[in-house]
Length: 133
Image (tube, rainbow, N blue to C red):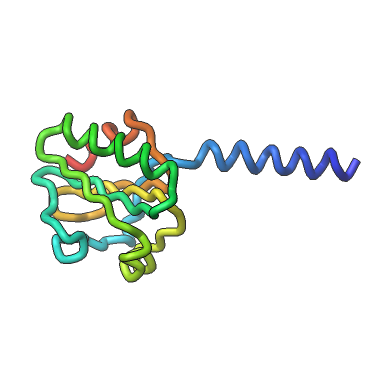
C-alpha cells in the first residue's frame, strides 16, 4: 500500500514537472529589471532579444541554442545571446536563475517580458516575441 502511494505521488510530481518545464511565463510587474549591453556583453536586438543561460554539459541547452538561433534568424530585428551561467554567477543570482537552460525574452528596451526554465518550444518562443515586439 505504501509503495503504491509513493509511486502515485512520484507520478503526479513527474507529470506536473513535465507540464511546466520550458513554458514561457509572464513576468510580474514587480520585476522591472532591465538588461543592457553592459550585462549581456553585446548590443540588444533592434526589436527583441532572446537571452539563454547555459552550462557546459547541459544537453537541453544545445537544442535550445538551435531553436533560439532559428527563431532569431526568422524574425527581423531579433537577436540571440547565449551566456554561460558559470561565468556570469552575479547575473544568475540577481535574476534568480535556478536551472539551465533558462531563456529570457527581452523587449527592445531590455525589459524581461517572458521567462522559461527548461527548453521552450519554437511555437512558444515565437508567441512570446509577439508580446515583446
